Image (cartoon, rainbow, N blue to C red; front, top):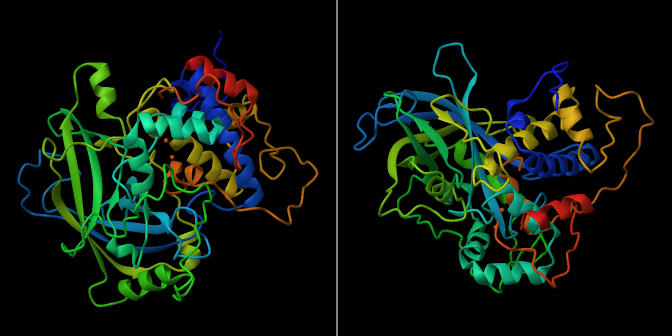
Length: 433
């Protein structure tokens, strides 16, 4: 094969093998098609935002020498808190998100050092991007059989859902780990967490007790009939707390571990369906995040978070195969950016346009600035209904289990807004099993 160098390349696409490209291309195309219809975020549709600072503690026992996470440093931060699915009622049981942007500490430089997308629940329910795609095309019976064999996946699903009285009273986890490059050149794996400043608020705050094998397949679980709180009480509470004398305060924590020498052990360490054992890799408090300025609704809506906004010292771990644990973070960063460009009406880079065109899903790019002028299609009614497993997969704008989810004798189904996954993609997934 001859590489076409007539257009700009995206290193994330170039690093993928063909099967990985096929799965990411189809997922990106499906989400892109929906984004063009609704003209808003696919996941975490509404939220509230604020500004403040991250102050790294002056003395941190056990913290290795690092350029960014360094004692005494202070960084401006922007945070967006949101529900995963519910766009009209905060009282619904839902996963909750906290996206954090850490900005440069250089005067006059407002560029991003890194974006972190965190959510409620200390694990995610898919190890690889192939697992997520497989989950979408399987019937309920296959999913239930899978979680019976892999009970930690079921736990990850239920633990992500939370009752909420306040965004500030929940714990938020990165699930996905990053590459932590130390000042001496050594590399480690790292995970981040936000916990409430009030130590009496434990990790079980808002916990939802399982009522079945899997959570209900309706993404919008209705509020309790006796709940009389306003529809958007979490947003109101956020603004009230931010504008109070103390603002909203979180403790910023991290876990780190050495990078294993062999590939198989590295992949186990990167498995986001299983949290790291805190007895072996304890979390340490490294600083405080204080939010003391509210963003307007328009400013919060304009925020865009992407794992690929990172720095050399806290980097995204790359993947070349859809069967690698790192494929989720690597792949979703590309999907995020494609959908963000389309949502904002920005031209798509040539590499992304070609990537979408090579997928099995046809995307109408008539509303995209780089596309030829085609007949505009008015969409008057758009359903916002999404199943819970679609909602939880993609973090802030939006991310699941590789083992045999597609099983002999189990019917493969199309479900939800992502149901346009093509027959060719299904065949690729079944072959990979």
